[in-house]
Length: 180
Image (tube, rainbow, N blue to C red; front, side):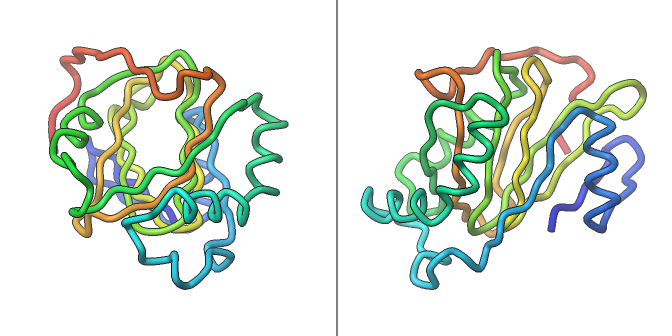
């Protein structure tokens, strides 16, 4: 279950309806997938083979096809990050820079935890969306944001894209952003 922390005020938003209402006010799509659908042997396996990634895509095919039909996604894949990921620090440095995309950035967390840091509208400023298994989030195009891992440093997520070249970002130098 996702939780939100407003960085300016340290306000914490909990509860599915409260989280959904806040994210909708920021034009961020939030949905849920059933995390128990993931096979037990894959739930805490953060070193996946290509075959295991394909299995995850098959398990969540109905949900993926539904999202793709509603939001125009054309390709999808599975990403897994953990301390076993080669060059994890370099990847996180790349992910942890404030950036935008010309399409939504959507992640469906199927195992582990992660945080999207998103710039809100008006006086909201930046807020953290702490995600865990079952959480699906779509950050709108041209919205300042970045992604990082939580303290456990483990995540498996399905990524969906409209652009066929996948994850393409444009760095943003935002004077309003302050690292937590």
